[in-house]
Length: 296
Image (cartoon, rainbow, N blue to C red; front, side, top):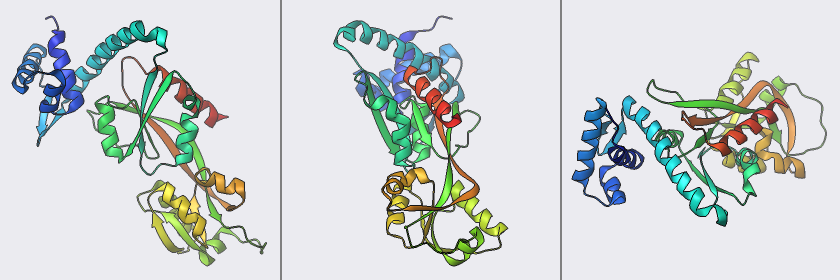
């Protein structure tokens, strides 16, 4: 059997768009023509490549494997043409980054910092719910997804979670006159707290600490977004359970103070990438730098 690359390109377009109509518009052909080409490719490969989910087409396991190879084939071809055509004009390489909407902005900037001032790099950063970002990653619409939670992976999913950093979690509050030193149990008993929501790994760890110390902290607010948690920490009179990196600017300025680091409690950060035949060269460097920084 010889692979028909014309059929494969039609499949690639449909997989990326997730919709026959949009793919047909992009290819400037009729929807029936696209459907016919996909059927021919499925017949040649001996596998169904799509399954319907309402009006959306979802890739089967064979479809995901085929998309991986198709992406490599056509992206490499497009890169060759671009390099040959635009090399003299300094064409830029693009890195498409998906970011879990609740992720710390300071962490995002720290991870992407090596690329921010490079003239040869174009960054595209999109935030959203983790599930939506992972679907776009699987369709090669994103190169990496940054998250603070390890995504559950079904058997057909083809992505890898890289642990790139971990940050301690602390009790943060406003500077105040020196008082007697208090133990963690005393703080948990006497203060009011702003905490992440119960779905967060930080919150689960905080609740476990409280249970071990037989205390029931008074919760003033629960917040699921790190940017909002940072804002609340500024105005809340009590203590906020938060990684210091999230409020690093306020700590440096002295408007907030670290009251206590919570023992054994950390927030981990992950970069999720799709399994690809040719890893993205910009991403490889970022992951390596992040690991070295965390280890050092």
